[in-house]
Image (cartoon, rainbow, N blue to C red):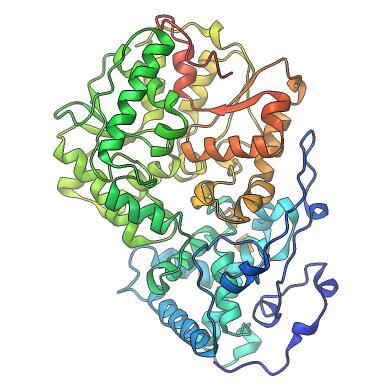
Length: 543
Ligand code: SF4
Ligand code: SF4
């Protein structure tokens, strides 16, 4: 690639402190282009605010720290010399061509092309983005990464006769490629910006497609998503490496826990053929929130449903991290999920508390699978509302008389459109329910979307807590504003394992769990808590 002669990298950080970082600067500045400081962040009332920690010098040699100093891609991948830099750039150009080609990208090419072509630069989407609004850094605008990509395409893939006059001014060099890869992991793909855009430009999809280019064509992706994520999921059984044998042991432990807690044994059926429901749950629920799984077992048994779990690889885990970075991995896992339903001869697959499990098995799988694979797939939330509404279990509304608010997982509300049933359930059983604002399809992401919940290398959790989860923490503190007194226990209902994990970690990070007794859990536990014929309350020890 031709190197730009004027090196503006010598400009001081002061020059850039007002965030005048144009897409052109993205390829030119020769040091870290943004440093987020505590004073840049919108203030959070009642929260402890830990200082940013320093990064380690050895990180600079191995990882792409040139963007904002944070590291999402935690495999050492930085080119070591000129040849490696050139190889990186040339692979990127080849990958970009494939991304824009019908033969190689049939899945999302049309919305991608429309989004590349049609931005009016009105910036309405910026104020909708929880990442940008948390600290107002230019590079975090929804349009910034899209504009960098757009300008690279204009210059290197589809050059026009007016070249730079039409914005084809981003230099493609190793710095640009490395920054773009990291910048694709500074967006939770919550698509709040997409919903706000008057012409439907999907900046979230553009983020996702950039990640795909890096994964499928350059083999570059965060370990938690790829190596420890989809690869391990397809080989071992789950995204955390838990095998079918380990899964069955977990099930036995949960059965014992239920018996200990409520004095009665409930069976968690596994691999039973010919029943009504195959329930698929996120493995994170088995590990971190077994009370959610236990609650499903109690509710389904009491309500008289015939159901089963599957111990099959990779069906024992409902997650599908391919959704966030790689079409091939996405399709492989989704196919196994629907095949399991067919093999077990169930009437329907019900997706448990996994937000993106809803999108992959419902909205995305609808595009991939037809005929024998098209077995009914649905969310557990309307089913749970039916159980409560029809009183298939006996309910006493007075047992959950504590402040409760509801977090809306992006994939359940904005992506799949399930908004009312979860509210109906909570309004029915929690007299002190209050909404956080904004809510429903206007919700803020928990900060753990698009894989961030499980990306815990180096300083990335700090970025997630401080920036990605910031607007969520702000709105949930506001929801409990009048009841912050620690003598009052408070519950955030988040019907998605990733959201629960992210919110609980952020609550701990900001000292809110301990100081104000706020805890985040699922919705099934709330239902069990309100059931009159359950011998002991599953939430009693937690809330
Ligand atoms: S709201 Fe839409 S048109 Fe306006 S800047 Fe954002 S993406 Fe472009
Ligand atoms: S998808 Fe969400 S995080 Fe990403 S740019 Fe849009 S609003 Fe921001």
